[in-house]
Length: 113
Image (tube, rainbow, N blue to C red; front, side, top):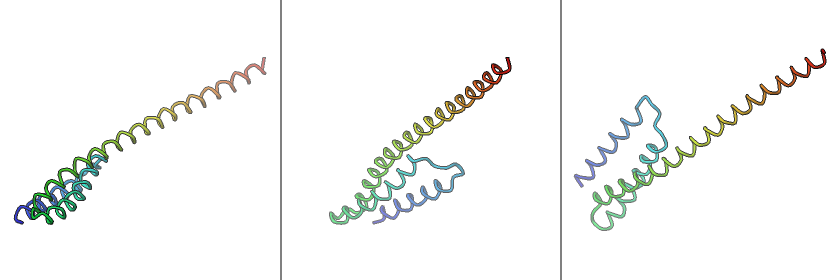
């Protein structure tokens, strides 16, 4: 049980230092934290049933952190892809507006001749 207390203290310290950082954490980090917390809880429950709550907590936290980080990383990549597409669309719309203005200018000039 002493190991469980140490692990929980370390996890809380990690959470406190990460959540207070000046930079916004990404989906991977958020996923790792959430997965770690969920995995630790489930691992502690399963470990308690087998008489090894501390080990179950540690294994669950590690597995949850890995799974959460993978899911969060995937979400980060998807969000980056969407932002990239939105930026390309914005540039295309800007170019289209420029070409329309140019066409209007050409039409006005043609009427004046």
